[in-house]
Image (tube, rainbow, N blue to C red; front, side, top):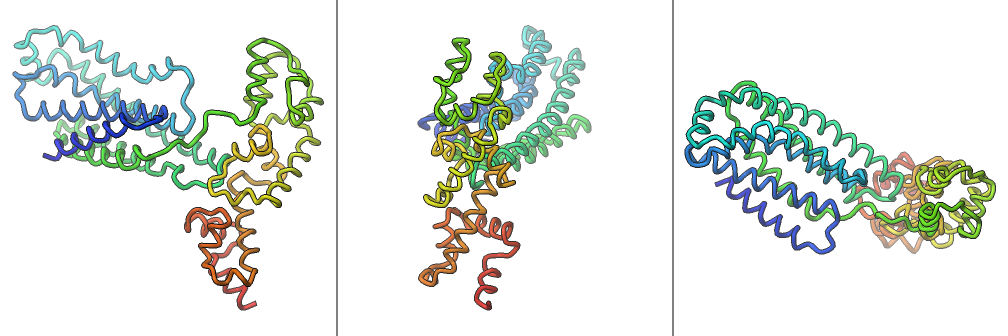
Length: 403
């Protein structure tokens, strides 16, 4: 009954994702993974409710499905964190273990029904090596992918600090817990293969729980990273590279001319690297240009208080300043000694402290003022306020009142 419930939830989630408008690539990977999970649960139900005589092929196919789950989770995670390789051939490499073992055991599928049943009843006689290869592939994939995925999420955490002024809804902590949960299931699978003891009920029971977690968080998870660079320099340079032409001042905006006029360019590869790929393009951003950009940034923050936008990102701010995000990130890091997240939230804290001193604001709650400053949650406000001042908001307010 539990497994039928899991399949029902799975089909409902598949329908939701299939009907979702403007699906991003991560949604498509998640849809594919849910379909695989649904098929795996169906195979398990068939295997546990039928005899070997009815569907002998199921007993050979079902053990291969675990090799599909980690690649699908990887593709979803990499797509969501903007770390997915551009080549689809690289994506396909993750499914080589599944396809390889499927080829290895393919002679089983051409056996007669009686021969298949005999192999199953004998515990896999004649296919012991193939079964062992599958077991080791499952063990290795679990270890490799858990480490790999946790590394991706760790890098993602660093990336959002450099590109976003908030982390609510984009930290992907739920995905980290999902990886831990799937890792625990893998340990049970490994224990089952070592002890020759069946833990299938526990494994698939946990799988149903994971499906619910995926449904609750995965389906509602929105896009995190934009795939476009909001600066005209990107298109200009792409066209220049495509046509194999040297960069000239006529191809660049006024800001870009200032950046490039003191920079020697020797070949096409250097042009592409400096204009688009380098993280900070320090060889391209002159000290004068950096200082001018910093002054424009301070002016924008002082006059327009751009930091009060709750979901401000580096890309949005770079678009407002008409500069490539890499240059803006470099200037903030070098001039302020902070990443983008800390820079913006420090300005929000200072704005909150300023508003707190205005007597007319005494009728408002601290959280109301915090929202006006750009914070979008109480936890974010408290965390950043204490990080900047070393005190909680209430402690700071009490000291001000006593003073």
